[in-house]
Image 1 (tube, rainbow, N blue to C red):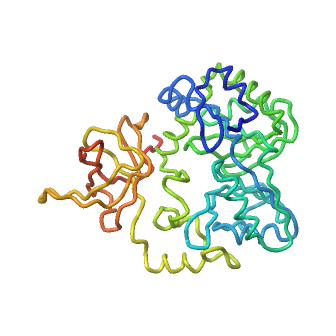
Image 2 (image 1 turned 90 degrees about the vertical axis):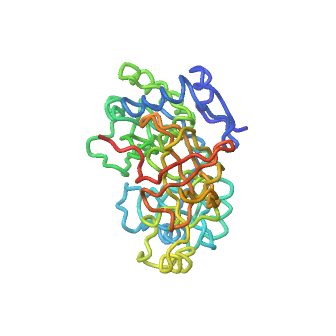
Image 3 (image 1 turned 30 degrees about the horizontal axis):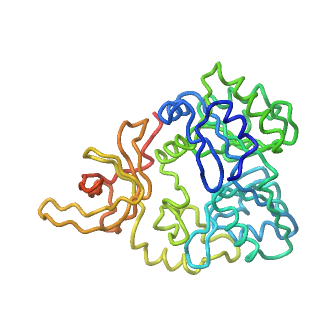
Length: 368
């Protein structure tokens, strides 16, 4: 298993280590619920150094990224980022990514850890034009500082003006005395926060400085367990769960990330035009359990008909958990469009018992 530059810091902080996408990562420290609530109320620190970074540079860097991804990077200002998708040639998804634009001749894709090799092979076999693509996944430590107190904690440690750094924008500067860091106002929790790129050898010092500065303000280290419950409350997709090689953006609820009118062609554009015109046959919905029980990935979804005793299997659960913020069991799953309306009732087979659930509006968690 691979280890991030922060492995020793996790051991020191008594993180419980597990395998994730070929990496040895902390799943929890103090406990998932405590960590989750910490991020919602103060701030949490995540090691996301296992994520991949692909660098695109050259005269055709922008055109190449435009062809490979679905969102419109030509609309980005320098120093701006955007959520996007890396489609395959069949209308499915190789990955979901963040595109960072330094300028029209230099962009970066941040990809999911478990998909680095697959994404790299895909990009290298489909890149176009005069562009140099470099896999810089081993060149970065990446730390996410997330929560309402994130700016307050980072401010004394950086020379970057956080007050002018808007959501999905990034800037270069010093963090904890370490030069050449990139600080982006991005995250995967639904809270304010930052993702800090540094050299791998600087990551541990930056992590320690943030822990030290943040501890009096309630900052705690956060594992993958709470990272998952936080993103699920926001109904953010996780690759391998809500999206994969077979799912298209329209059924996944990601049509807003596909810019059909952007200049030039892009991968699977014709297929997406057809799906958009015809409408998807199924939809990924959010549901809340009415009956007792916690839905888990792979559990079967059935129709609910109070008049009939027979129920038809219509889908599977993609993700499910007990939501710490809502104190209710929630989940996502694909169901036929006819059953996908908010307020529709479905049944989830939980260990042989069919339990009632209701399709609800998402995100599940809405800030007061």
